[in-house]
Amino acid sequence: MHSPALGAALLRLALGVLFLAHALLKLVVFTLPGTVIWFEQHGLPGPLVYPVFAAELLGGLALLAGTCVRPVAVVLGLIALGAILPHAANGWEFANEGGGWEYPLFIAIVSFAQALLGPGAFAASRRPAMAAT
Image 1 (cartoon, rainbow, N blue to C red):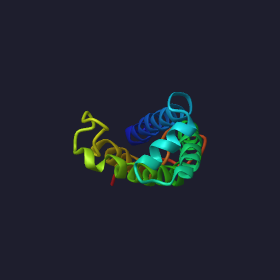
Image 2 (cartoon, rainbow, N blue to C red; image 1 turned 120 degrees about the vertical axis):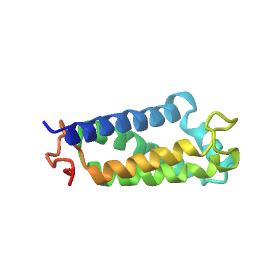
Image 3 (cartoon, helix red, strand yellow; image 1 turned 90 degrees about the vertical axis):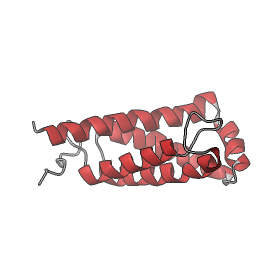
């Protein structure tokens, strides 16, 4: 097994867990109605919570399984870019009150990198990660 394939798999699994955790946070801790209120307080349409939640939940599971990795990673990357908006006024540091914008930006960049790399090793879809040239 080549290390690029293992690296892509490790990245995919980490992203899958991260997005699954974000979905479950919305569902279990904040609740979906509570997240609707938070979205609205930050200038986002409240009903947007439901497709974002579904994308994070199903996308996280798809990444863990290694299914449809490239399109899922692009969609999740776009969601992460959207998450910059409510954090933009809080500054760079995510430790700032309300969280900064560098963390969602990092998640977006990593998601797009996953889309470029592909699923890597141990994925349901058998397409290998891009080989180093």
